[in-house]
Length: 85
Ligand SMILES: [Mg+2]
Image 1: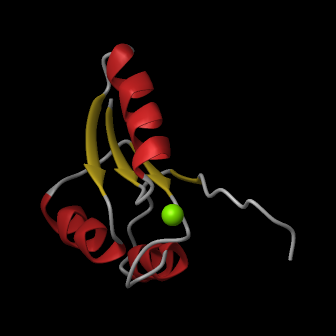
Image 2: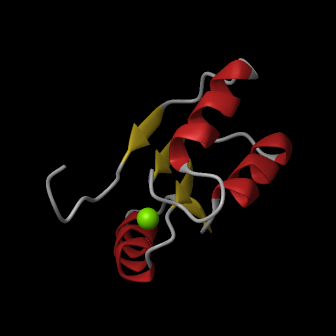
């Protein structure tokens, strides 16, 4: 199972990355949307875990670009909000 983790928060990223590595998933961790889009063109993934709040290009832009390019990779949005509204 090859997973792409797109997460800029080091604490969340390390926790998720560590948990996936523990169950022997191959995990690529990138920390911004632009890099995520670059790695999609060179690598196929079984699953993408996508944060929405990313520096530069945000997660929704990444998702839209991916689907516009007809990439149907399964994707979970794993964004954190610490407030309402
Ligand atoms: Mg974030």
